[in-house]
Length: 278
Image 1 (cartoon, rainbow, N blue to C red):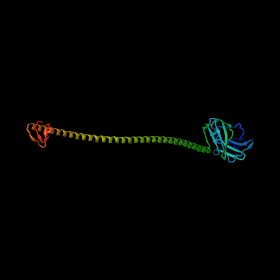
Image 2: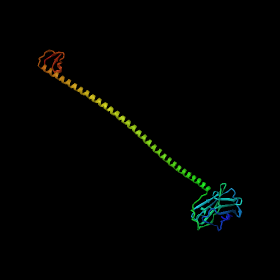
Image 3: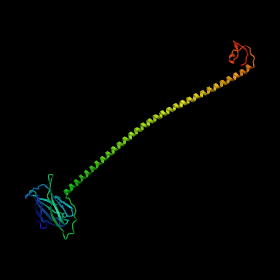
Image 4: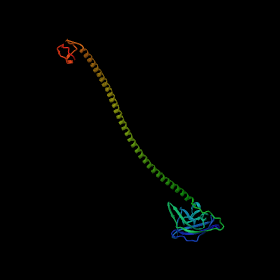
């Protein structure tokens, strides 16, 4: 072990909780090492080709993940030996730190029971900001997971929007059908109104023609009546003149052809007129 390292070599039976008095110093840089021998009922576990990740939860609840990209190294895969050089951020918060080891191989994942170690406050340290940290591999997985989550969210949103669009389209079609039906009814009513108006105009034209005919006939009747009146007046005038002439005349003998004494109430014997008065 290097003189500049604070290394703990621990046998970690995955079926049992590890109880060890492990203490690291806050603020140390690349000098605190956990060397873990993974065993199962005292037999070493072959971790060859596994992806090993150390996960730490600090007292302030921030989390750090370390993997091969941040100083996790399989020292002897066949015998389950792996080490983790603790990052400064892992030791940034004094107090109890929980640790678990996450293993992945061929799609199978397994996480050990957690164990604790202490981080003692450093008197001479100005302190290190304790933050969350996810290793490069997990960060990539997180990015993928986040992107997938965002894609799924967007897909849900798209589905919701599509459902809303279809609902709105159905409502629009229903409104359009109602509008077309109403327009058809309006057109039918307008056609009927036009038909009725045409019938009314035709009836009015017939009435006007009939009235014009009546007026014309009335005119003819008035003319005929006037003509009849004039003829009657003329006849009465002629008769009056004839009567006057006849009464002032003594006629005997044969009457003129145009005189029919019977018309005046006189006695007529053949063509002989007795000259009586009208």
